[in-house]
Image: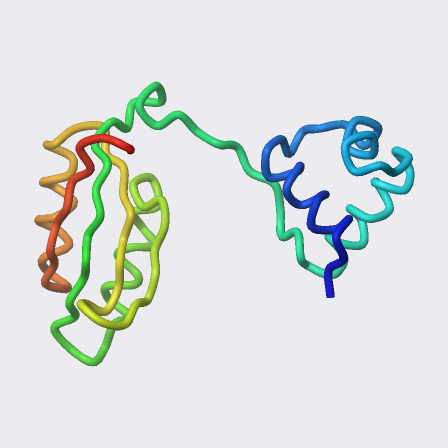
Length: 137
């Protein structure tokens, strides 16, 4: 069970994963060493699974942001899942879902041409519904 201090530590790390333990401690009213110990415990307990970089996709050359709802054609999903694994350069998040569809893919592409190529290959495995993000609100 996470206490209030653990939750504050997670909030601060979510804002800045590179924050120093001294600065983190100041923000959550602990010493730097106490904050480091708490973070180590959260990592050990797998509450913190890792640290990542928040990427500006447009500046990195991936301006086309799409959401693809996947409808499987057969009971064997492995060929589709293998295809998705091979496309990690484009697939940002992938979810197994309930409701409208079987899977949801959040993808980024450098161009509409790359999106079209991806969709052409994807259609060999599944049916899909495409939504393209216009802007973030």
